[in-house]
Amino acid sequence: MRLLTWSLFSACLGLNALGACAQEAYPARAVTVIVPFQAGQGVDLMARALASEFSKLTGQAFPIVNREGAAATIGFTALAAAKPDGYTVAISPNTPLTIAPHIIKSITYTYDSFVPVCQNFENVMAVFVGPNSPYKTYQELAAAGKAQPGKFSWGTTGVGSLPHLSASAWMAKAGLEATHVPFRGEPQILPQLISNELTFATASISGMAGKGPRPLAVFAEQRHFAFPDVPTMVELGFEAGVPGLNGMFAPKGTPEPVLATLEKTCAEVTASQSFRTAAARLNQRVAYLGRRDFDRRLRADFEEKGRLIKQLNIKTE
Image (cartoon, rainbow, N blue to C red):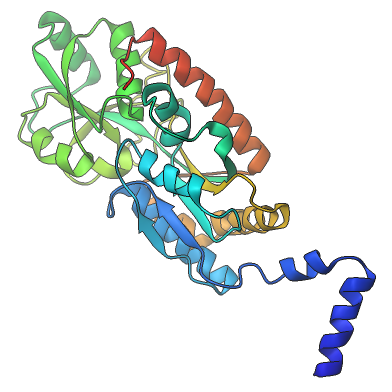
């Protein structure tokens, strides 16, 4: 055994590849996964499904740590400050990276504080009404809203959130006026929507499907498999909007061999039947992108969100 170990070590030295040999051991211990949202919400449940598959493939634990708050920037602030060794990553939508920097001026990180490792799934939004709402179609809701400007109320997960931006752009084009009511999360929206305290809400399909609310329009170019009879915003003459672009992120400076291992494992995890089954159960759309394509899509979204926030005159904090 000693001779074999020495021979392997000598081979690494001879090939000037000691770093490569050491890289083979990654991950050699548990990898902490920051999720910047509440436990039990759609992103958290998907992150746990991903972490479970990562653990199966690598043989190491991928424990979830929920660092919620401040539009998901608390979690990303922690990620930016983490040691860039591959043992702290985040699973998150694009919100803290492509939206928050345009709204929250006090954040201490920038887009380039992170490396987008891979995209795993898209969290699609929709306009929902309560199960007892008098509005059965998008057309009925829009007609009533135009007839009663300012009388309706609508909920989202906060000013500058993806549902808020998507709906604000749609309402501006549709000529609709309503009172926005921000909530901490979708679990807080649900009872208000069911009781008709809110006229409608813009929320994720994963967070609302099967819980009572009825979708009237989906922010997407293609109909969602969970609601095949519900029209898309594109069909109704509006922009599709960008869904939640969810994936893995690492701190800037994480070694290239570690990033390559994470990216490769990401692809295997996303393709696994176990993950795809979990995604279907949670009404999430599986959509894989590698490092370069994910970064390209996120950078384009960063620019688009900056323009949209200025266009909608959303106040910064």
